[in-house]
Image (cartoon, rainbow, N blue to C red; front, side, top):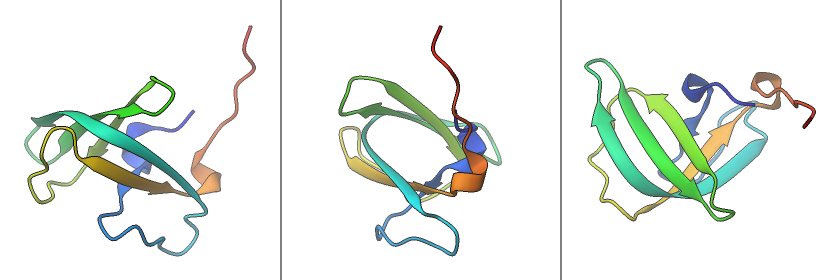
Length: 80
C-alpha cells in the first residue's frame, strides 16, 4: 500500500534521492483540489492508482505517467 501523497510524478523519469521504486500508468482523470491535484491512473494490470500532487503541467488523458516513490513509504499487506 502506498499513500496517494507519497507518489511523485517523474516527468523526466529520473529518481530523486531514496526513490528506489517506480510505477507507470495511463492517465484516466485529473481533478483539481485547490492546493493539490488528484490524478487517477490505470496500471498495466488493470488496477487503479490514485495520487495527490502539487499542481503540475496539464496532462492529456491517456498520457503515460511515470511515478517514483521510496521503499520507506510502502507497506506490504497480506491478502486474505
